[in-house]
Length: 196
Image 1 (tube, rainbow, N blue to C red):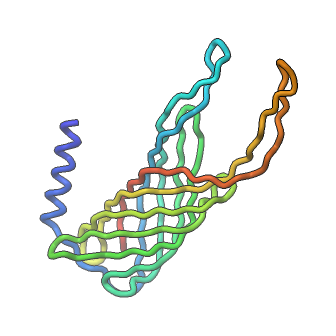
Image 2: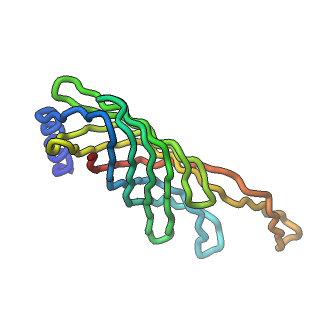
Image 3: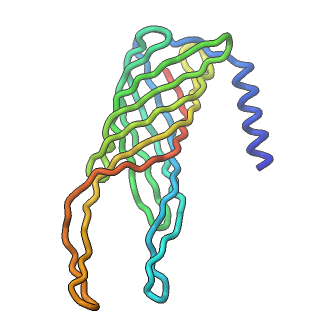
């Protein structure tokens, strides 16, 4: 815990001490390492045959890239795609967003925060909606490049088949297909990358 606090203080001090040049009009691209974390509740059977639940964390990691046009020093619009995979003990799952992105780069003296919004589709698990707002900080890295660090929330949609269990006798059940429904999974997201 002490190391994490020291690391956060060092990042904050670096952010306050360094500024970034504002992006120039024209083409702009991003390449980012991305990760998402969530907590899921799973149904389990115990040795006596009773049903219970247990909570487990899920960690997704992958990359994303987006490319587009910098309208002026503040506004960027573009499109991109990404891939994140979870390979926990019980989960082998993907988030595959295809999105349009809007980004606002601000400058307050030497302080250069940004916020962006990605809206599109999660191409994994039957195709669902995808929404990911992020806030962060941009560091200058050379004449035309920047390093971006951001955190936010991701809502990844998916489609799931639903069934109903009907009791047909004292010890017998019948499973009936109800249909497919759209759901969202919320994730805490973190991205680290470069813009060029």
